[in-house]
Length: 179
Image (cartoon, rainbow, N blue to C red; front, side, top):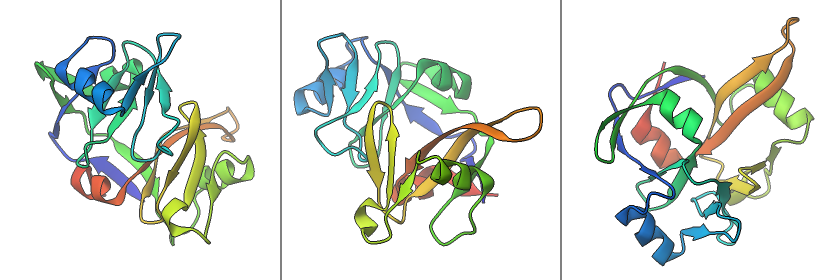
C-alpha cells in the first residue's frame, strides 16, 4: 500500500541534549535514559521497557499519543520537517510504501524477511513484528503498520538496503493517509 503523512501535520519535537522541559520530564520518568557514553536510550512503545532505541545528542524525539517518545535521526528529521516556532514543526508529506498483516508481500518485505532483518510471529499477535533497529530489539503488535522510509536499489534494480520502522495502529490512523 502507498501512504502519506497527513498534509500539513504539525508536530512537537525536541532535540536531545538541548535540556528542554520535555527531555527532562521524560528522563525523570525513565522513558529517556542518558547513557555513560553521552548517547540516549529512548524507550518507545516498541521497546521492551529495558533497552531503549539508541540515539545521539542532536537527534530529535517526538512523543506519541500514549506519552511514549520515539526518535528521529537529525538528518531524517530535518529533511522531513520545517521548523515553525519553539517546539512546533510541520511534517513534509511524501508518499511511502507500507505493509500491514494480510496484504500481499512486497519485494521490500520479502528482502527484509529473507535476510532476517524482520521476523513475523504469527503465534504472538502482541509481538507480531520483531526487528533489530536503533541498537535494540523492537516489537509491535499485529495491527501495527510496517512503513518503508527508503528502499535502496543497485543499477540492476536489486534491493541493497531498506530503511523501515513499525507504526502502532493508533498512531498510523492519526498521522497517515492511504493513497
